[in-house]
Structures are given as structure tokens and as C-alpha cells.
Image 1 (cartoon, one colour):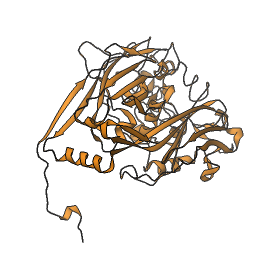
Image 2 (cartoon, rainbow, N blue to C red; image 1 turned 180 degrees about the horizontal axis):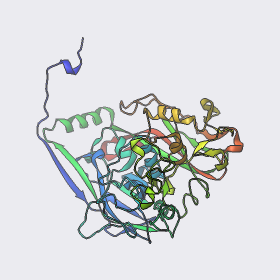
Image 3 (spheres, rainbow, N blue to C red; image 1 turned 90 degrees about the vertical axis):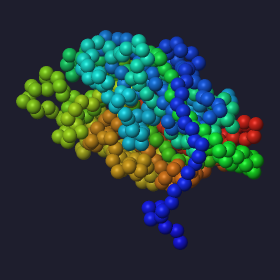
Image 4 (cartoon, rainbow, N blue to C red; image 1 turned 90 degrees about the horizontal axis):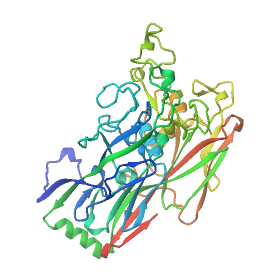
Length: 467
């Protein structure tokens, strides 16, 4: 019989451990802007902690009243990881997936250096007034912005990787379009802040990578790795691999997968035209988008016009400050404006139903209303709530849906329990399964599929990827 650890008296030790932190410069120190890229070469002779890697950088912008997007990862459309010239992880719209993960409490945001909010009047770092475009000093490499290196770095197991057994690992970050910025016409009133001005631009400068590395000098760890390679021919690493698909959603979108373990399917929708809550298409010039239910007049002179009462503001403490988004990251339920009332589908109108299907098998097994996906999505992410404070906020500003296909906690246990599609290239769809007249036909739909990949590192630094 064994007892739980909190009843047992024991300790253990690992001797001759050393640690160090390094700053790695990019392959080019030039400033980079929209649609360009930056690249880093990871150290090769160390135990590297992927989850502790951070890229620090600074951002400058142009435009009369440009505001930088919420979340520092918003600038990076794709993070590509190559091992010995072989791409093992890369997908488009990684910044949109990060927004979905934050909205569903899968990753946390540090307001100190991740620029967690869009501010109309004061910058979110020093609370000093911003009178023109939001931009920051670059004279002495101030570390205002910091991000991790995406889904592979967060999920790879073991998270501390023996780099001496791998070929050269290269990280390439591809920058997003300028539409990730908010480009308001002015900041003097809330109405002007939400009205589109001229599209602003941004540049990233003084970027570098901070790495934490370890060494265990007693020889036993390396001996164990080498014995494993000699016995089975390889070391095995697992990580969560994401793929993405983009389409105009006209009642149905189709995509495919041949993953050996398909774990989740995630989708979000962005307005393709000037429909509530956007003043223009998601990828056009837009002002800031006010999140429903928040006191977006807070700290403005006009906030006192009604003796302290502000319409459309919820009373809970979380909503008594401002909350703005970039249009590029605003996910909205694919329902026509005439069928929405305060962001929620109207009681008097039929609500469209949405379902995934895999080889004609429907998920969920019933026709799920667009708003009914909230509970299904919470269950799929394994959370008891999301970032949203109302159904209207979720439908209008943070809408995404998720279908889980694996067992809970499989990733933490390194267990592949997802849907096995490797025998065939499965046909997957996301479609309106009822009340199609209330569904939009020009919105952009992004579908993300998560699967478990295995990287096998063999003798002589050979690599094999099992998808």
C-alpha cells in the first residue's frame, strides 16, 4: 500500500546543478514592420527551458491617434519553429488564437509588460497622458513589451529540452498587418475614439530573446538520455500542434485533417463588413471597439452628464472601468444585426444553429444554437467561467466556439486520446444546421485544429515528426 506524499517523510537531491540566463540577439538588428519577420537561433549546448523563453521588444507607431492593440502577442501573425531546416510548428493567425485562449482563461496576461488593454487617454505602462499616437521611447532598450514563444513553447514536454541532441533550432516571428492597431479619428470624445481615422502603422525595434538554461554536471542525466537513445533509437518529445483555416462563412466552411490525435476544434467569426459592433470590416481601418457592458466613458468629462449614470454599463466591479478592442480581434456571433438586441439574439427572431461535423458525424449530436455554444465551449476548455461578464459581451466581442475530442487533462499526462484520423484525410465542416436566414453570409471564419505531435530525436541529430 502506498500513501499520498503529504503523509510521507522524505527528500531527494540532484547535485551539481547550474543555471544561467542569456540574452540572444536576432539574426538582424534592423527595425521590422508589418508583414516582415525576425529570426533567432537557439543555443545548442544546453538544457533549455522552452516555457521560460521570453522575447522582449519595443514598439513605435505612426498616425494621428493610433492606439496599440491589447496584448503584446497581437503583432505576430505566425511563429515558425524549424529544427535542422524542417518546420515542426507554424500556422497563420496565431495572434487571433492567443486572443481566444485569453478570453477562455487558458493563458494569463501580465499587465506590467504585455500591454493588456487599449487606453484612450493614458498609456497602460506609466498612466501618463497620450496626446497623439501611442509610441514609446527606444533610446536605451527599455523592456516595455514581452511575450512567450507561442503554442509549441507552452506545450512541449519535457519542457526543458536537451538541445545538444537536436540540430539547429530556429524561431522565426512573422509580423501581422497594420489592421491589428486601433486607428481612431480623435480621442476627445468616446464617439470619435470609436470612429475610424487614417490607418496607423507600427514598427518593432530592439528585440531580443531571453533564455534560461540549466546544466546537471553529475553525468547521470546525459547517461540516461544516451541509454534511451541506444535502447529505442530515439528520444521522444510531444507538443500541441495547431493548424488554421480561413474562409468567408456563407452557412458552411470545409477543412480537413489527418492528425493522429485531433484534440480540439476552435472557431471564431469576424465581421466582414460594417455590421455591429464594427464600423468597417475587421481588416480595414477601424477606431477602437468598445466592449459591451463596460464603463467606457470612465474618466472622461462626458461621464458625468447623467449624474453618474451611464447607459449600457453593468454594475459589477469588473465592468466599472473601460474595455476596448481592436476590430481585428473582435469575435462576434455570426448573426445578422437585425436579429441582435444588445449583442444577444432577439427572443422574437429565430436563432441560427451551428455544428461541426467530422466525416458526416455531427458535433454536438444536437443542433446547437449560436448562443448555446457558451456552455459547450466552457466544458471543452475545462473552465467554470470565461473572461466575459455577460452573454452580450461574449456574443458581441469575444465569441468563439470549441469542440473537445480528447479526454480531459490528456496534455498534462502526455496521453494521446484525441480522434485518430491518420488512416484517412477526414472531411470536416462547420455549418449552419438550422434557421439559416438569421445567419450572416460575409463574415470571416477562422477555424483552428489542435492535435498532438511527436518529435523523435535520433542518433546523429536525426529528426522525425509524427503528425
